[in-house]
Amino acid sequence: TIAMRALDEVLKLQTDSGLFPTFIHNTKQTLSFGNSAISIGAMGDSFYEYLLKIWLQGGKKESKYREMYDKAIDGIMDKLIFMS
Image (cartoon, rainbow, N blue to C red; front, side, top):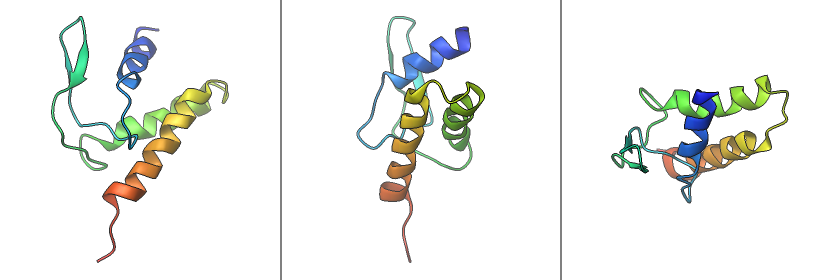
């Protein structure tokens, strides 16, 4: 589907941490990060939830979505969760 092709294009913008900024810039020729803000709150959490949902709803056949989800969860734990 068009939505899955769009997601696959976004996932090509791989990051070291597995975390993606809240905005993606699309020039129709290339995609790039539109900012550096990373969030698991408003405007950010749904992206990570959908990675897992797509894998589950697809019968757990497309491992790339689960791998990206796992990488993002590791990034959240390493970069965004802190003890005070």
